[in-house]
Image (cartoon, rainbow, N blue to C red):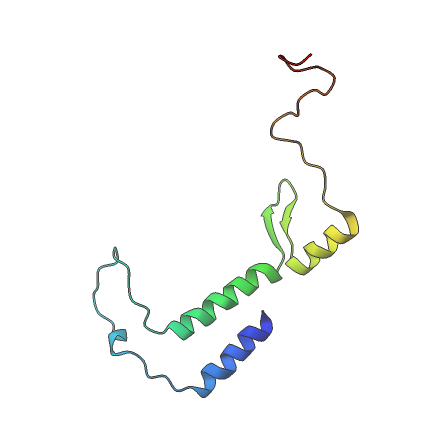
Length: 103
């Protein structure tokens, strides 16, 4: 992902794209979808935000000790420790009893 962002920035730096004439500030309604004025810049910001989300630690709930970890670290933890057992949402059927209708 970092390579993709770096490559995008390299290509974007070489290409001189004029700003759209629609980019002039105007009093436009805010309750309707807007056109992208500079799609390359918006994409670069979006990609940086996404990369930041998967590359940093962050408290989700400090009181309960729930922490978001970088994706690389999370994958290493799964390899080292495995995935913890979760309580099933629906109890499995009891295996010792025969179901009705079969004998």
